[in-house]
Length: 93
Image 1 (cartoon, rainbow, N blue to C red):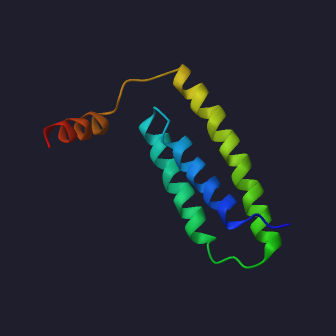
Image 2: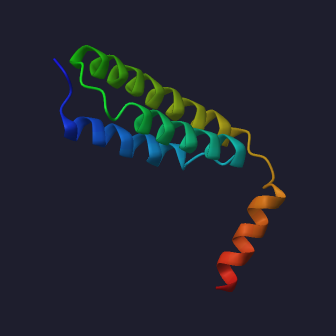
């Protein structure tokens, strides 16, 4: 049985929310870009079997992102130059 529209949207929001928790700038931006791209690419799917496969893949990706965020936050690094610049500009405005 194909997941409901609400279930798919909930999965999308959870993937975005978890991706934003990454401390490392490169991983965070890659994950956000990848999630948005995959959902945009598959938004016109009509075949219920394909939709279900994509939904299952998305749930697996969500659990992987959750694990990786925890591991990545255990071994934090210093912010990149690009991160400190964007933070300075946001405090100025």
